[in-house]
Amino acid sequence: PPPPPPPTLQPPPPPTLTTPPPPYMPPPLIQVQQPTPPPPVFAVTTSVKPPPAFVRAAPPPAPAPAASVTAVCPNIGSIAGQLQDSFQQIADTDGIDSASVVVAFSVSDDGVISAPHIVSSDAPDVNELALQGVLGLRCNGQGQPMELYAPFKFSTQ
Image 1 (cartoon, helix red, strand yellow):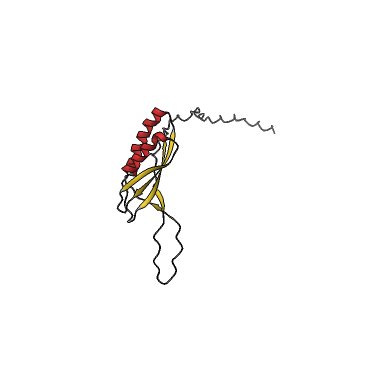
Image 2: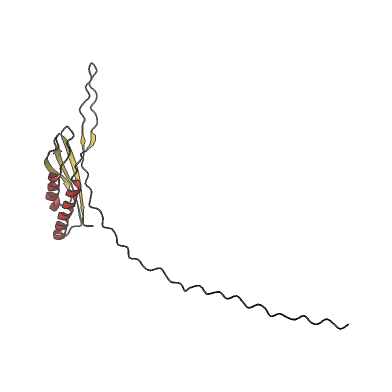
């Protein structure tokens, strides 16, 4: 018998073509604006001795340590904004970047502010500004007179 015919060779299948990946495109640059810092916050605190407790037939108690009292002054935000604007003018004129002033003052039992005076200051040019700020405060009375200290920190940033 004759030999079997040679097998017919099939050509290989054509390669599957895929689309190339898109060229790399970096993300767009986004400029983010820095938020402006909030106006400074001023806290008003003091140390006041509470009245001694009334005790009958017992020896009087030892004096109580001074208590820390915080006064509520609802207009502190608007005063802080006004002071910061005024400080900026002083800073531009005198060439200073920051200042710290501590003002002591009295608050009567019904909230009237009196006798403000500077306790400490590192920039005498802003002392008057801090005193005006204290006199502009409207504090809620606590039912008894208090001696308070208000630290003011001014900055041009």
